Structure formats: C-alpha cells, structure tokens
Image (cartoon, rainbow, N blue to C red):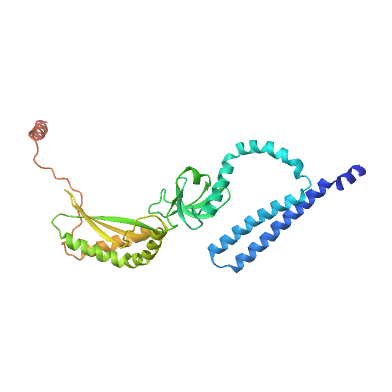
Length: 308
C-alpha cells in the first residue's frame, strides 16, 4: 500500500492536477481582490460594471491559458479525441453555442449595452447585465402600463439576437415620438384649443425638444434616415363626432408616462380657464325618428300592462 501511495504521489498527472487546482484558485482570488479594489475606487456605476466584466473575461482567458501550459505535453494526444467529440458536442450544445455567438455579436456589434431599454425575445426592459449565455433585464410593462418596471428580472438567451428583431429604445437616438389626442366638441373654438395645446407643449417639452435636436442631427448624419423636425406640433382632423387635436412631441424613452401625465394635466387646466369656449367631447347616442314597428311594440307592451 505504501508503494502504491508513493506511485500516486509521484505520478506526473497527479502533480499536474494539483498544480492546476492551486493555479485556478490563485487566479480567482487575485481577480476577486482586483474587483473589490475597483469597486471601492470607481464611483460611476457604468464604468464599474464594465471594469468588473472585463476582469471576469480576463480571468477566463488567463485560466484557459494556464490549463494549456499545465497540460502542454499532453495536448498532442488529445487532438484526435477533441476532434471526434467536437461534432457530438456541437450538436448537443447548439443552443449554447448560438448564445455564445450572440454574446459576441452583442459585445462587438453594438446591438445594445447595459443601461439600454430594449425588446428582446418578446420581453421589454432595461438591460442590467450581458452574460456569455443570457442577457438579464429589469422588465417593463406586462400587467403594468406606461413602460414602467413591474419588478421582474428576466434572463433571455443571447441566441434571440439571431432569431428575432432587437428593438433598442435608447441606442443611437435615446428618444421617442409620442402622441396624445384631445377630442373637442363641434362648435367650440378649435383655434383657441390649438393655441393652448401649443402653449402647453412648449412649456412642458419645448426645452427638451431643443436639447434633443442636436442629438437627432448627429443621428441623421451618421445613419441613413430622413431629417424630420423634433419640435412639438399639433395636428387636427375632424369627423362626424368631434374634432381631434393630436399633439405630437418627442420624449425620453424612460419618461414617456410621466411627461404624458404632465401634458394632460396642463391641457385640462388650460381648458378649464376658457369658460366653455373649449369643451371636451364625449361619445353620446341620440335616439331619434323611431320607426312605426318600434312604436307598435311599445304600444302592445303598454296595453298588456293595463290588462293585467
């Protein structure tokens, strides 16, 4: 037994495995210490996140290089085995491989980054982490309206980058166009209504639109998109029920509901000050010109009630 133990202790393979374990633990410990030091020194969350992710990727690369150095004398013999097993592994783990390819596409293709609001795989939310296999998002919507957080953290496979469209709300142009529709009654002062909506738009989002104009011009120069004005505009159309005034305006993708609330509040306050010159329209049903059949049915019902 002592002889067998001696052979085991002096076996080169055992020595390599022990060296590998010690080396991997040392690499992980060094990376953890470096990440803690970076966390204390870096105040910007975005920079801190990218630094930690970079350290993680560097640790994987160093660990892989270390494994190759430890088993450098055996890599030649493993080549054939790796080649035979590679086909089976690729078939069995094709979803994992596609997810890794998706991570590379996201990391180097600029599809999205942490902090962006996106829709991926049917899920809308803010990206909080981009892993090798999955993208983690703080979900918006579903049972909660107005593009607000619902509290769920969702992990979506990176393979969806190749399977479905990726909607990015805040990449090249972090703004959205939104609209609110105000129906007013026929016969009211639609010119005054249009004027007060223009005034409210300038008050609430006018300065914001001017700030966004420079970003929009940069996007027009960089991308093949049509130049369009970003200042708020009120559009009007009429139908048989009412006059529709539509306010089209630009807004931050993460402030859409809050800005809409402010606009509606100010518009209603302004309408109240017009003393009836501008009135909100509501849907009504007028019953007129009853047919003889309807009158006969009403008379028959009345007569039956008298007889009983």
